[in-house]
Image (cartoon, rainbow, N blue to C red; front, top):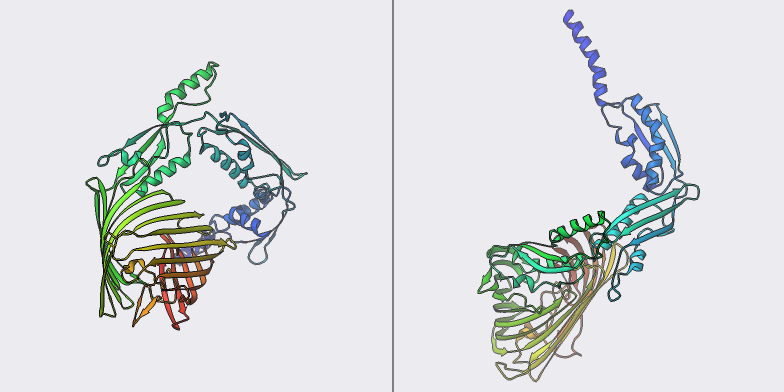
Length: 595
């Protein structure tokens, strides 16, 4: 019996201990505008500690007494300084706390005073102080929210330190809120600090390459005003070369440390302070990529079928960068090698290369060998190039007719870009145009002139929807078409052309085969809706054709629906399109924005 009594006593003690371990459970109901409801749910102690195992009724009562002031503090950050707060506790059944919040009218921004100190500039290059003040992000009449007040201060300071005044700082900031008038008077003082300019270039980390590989890409000249945008642009250019595994571009502040210390000592003694500092050396630190790299891969394209590929790159072949690739696809096989010179001091990118290729497309088999040289220059906003290539081609149509042709054309190309994002554009346009031809009877069977133009525009309808319009035209003029290589003729159809049709299915019929024509016209209209940040859907209509005469360009149409995904490497598009002329549906897959 003694043992039984001890067991019962242990059980009786364990019950309250278990209840204490679980805590005193209660519910919280918040009646407030949705934005404030979320704010209170995320930060109010009544909500945050309701699952705490140490919670009891006394703890809850203490939090109930503190809750009104905590609510007022929290909603004040959202601009509401005179809320009506009512809290009740219903202990019938599971205890329930009901919190009613009537926020009242928000406090609005009244007068905004922005004092700028320093900002000495020459008449030839004045600093636009009015534009800086106009960029202030919390203007009069806006709801005064604490997070937006802090963001506005950060943004205006960032706008200055990214320019010629990298030592700028906020020396004063004050927000005076009057709950009775519901107005907030804002005042900040922004001191520019000394004006700074760039000095000479210093490069660290080069082992294999000459310093000209870096200096030729430098957009900054000694004496230019300090600019964070210029540093980022320079770093981006160096990263794009492929020579470096890591690149860091910065202003070498250690070089002016002594001058800053001397200036501080002089200030303490009452000496006048300089408005500018010694030039900041432009410091580039690089880590070179390994010289050789090889890779293999497999894939699939709805245009050319299954694919196996291998690449081999060597970053230093007689001072040149070599990139080579072998690609084996169902409808196309190719081997190529290209050599790239370092960018010149004038900004030119020169290259040359060779390609051998076999294609079997819609009953036409072509075997080509090509050598080419190219000079490119410009910026991502305007790229230009001029190229010369020699192409030797053998063509078989319907597996019976075989012809041979060669050509030596020169082509000028230009691309204009004005988009909000180069990888995921949602607004703006891209236009590409080419003009060229083989006009001399040198290694050319048939002289010709060829011109193309293509463009795409993005027109946002809302934050979640966009209309995309695309068009392409092409024309070739020659006395005879028979001597012009197939590469320079036009066909349509496929992922980035007229969807609903096979790759290059649209063109000139020659027996059972489709061959290229002299003219090309295609167009597309697409509506995209992004129901999540990375997932979207699309509906589209494409039309176009290729032919030997403008009057013979009877357009073939395709239309359908698609899925869109924003991957780290670019947009992935999967479409189901119905080709109206052939009464068949096709699946199309593409990576990157359609151009």
